[in-house]
Image (cartoon, rainbow, N blue to C red; front, side):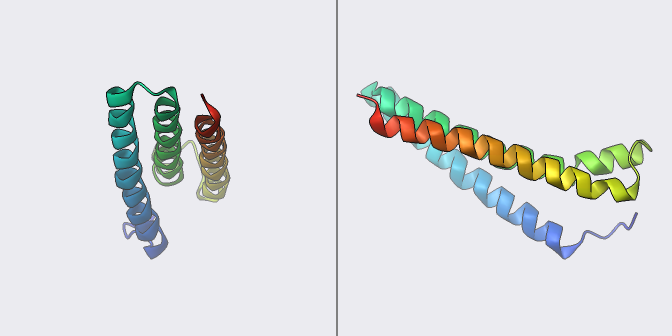
Length: 110
């Protein structure tokens, strides 16, 4: 395995980092708003954005780190990297779907 990081992974790491920072800030401020007002819709909103941010983080970790760790342990051949890309996209998409459902719920809570 080459010690050089492909430029596509640099882009993934950069955008995942920005997603983590911005999503974390949105989650933090929506949770603070919930604490001030005790409005259930703001609590649901903060949960939704938190799950979406967590999904982006987990998707990136699965995509970049898990295959390399398994390859170092000789549990995964080089050709198995593509399979983990599919897993990471699925996990992130699943958590994003759950997050959008919670955010939609937050818009309709009375």
